[in-house]
Length: 294
Image 1: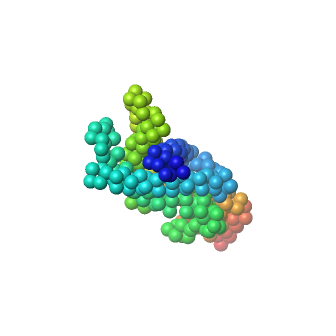
Image 2 (image 1 turned 90 degrees about the vertical axis):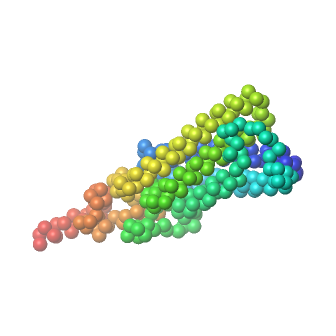
Image 3 (image 1 turned 180 degrees about the horizontal axis):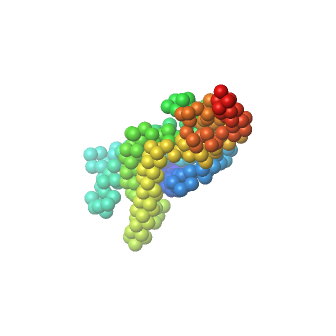
């Protein structure tokens, strides 16, 4: 088959999968951006993109794209190094801004892959995968609270309360910037947009696009870390209520059990007490009344 039997075909596969992955990364940055300004809406997005059939198909398709991109990247790198021997590049002049990244695309890809594995462990495995398998995710650092799979903001807090998460993410974002700025114009060159005038325009567009996307990722990581340290994702009344509603509708167990023991104790945060509803609220009132009478 031409796409796999020739070097040009393999580059076309790299280009097409690369275009799809750039679009996904852009979507992912915009989706996470919702959490910056409207955390409860972000949880609704996570609920919509849970273990639904359309989300599962999209996830499977994305996995196939990533695997193909990685396989063909390694294939082409090995092929090129074998063909050129000690002389890795037969082109001695290239734009300064892409020279380093073009020579280190495989290394950058490995760094990004390692970062992706960490990201999947922190989020996908505890959200969509947990929902598929029917597993319960428990926050051992907060009295064993069970977390609804769609509670995206809670999983943000679980990830970014680790002091190593932010620096690891920043390293991943830097590698992503270098990888995408080179890959963006390279994939257009592969599909034939390699004229001198158009290539300069594509490089400019690519650099601006990737810089905006990566800058948004960096801003999100920093804000998520700050908000986690402030306890926003744990204690916000609106989010607490949302976690409980998700659990009540079969999307997992609540992040905090709505019981008298959880909400009537002196140590319970006031925002959590405010979310006590139904029988638990009545039980709280009953306990307080008995205490006063005594």
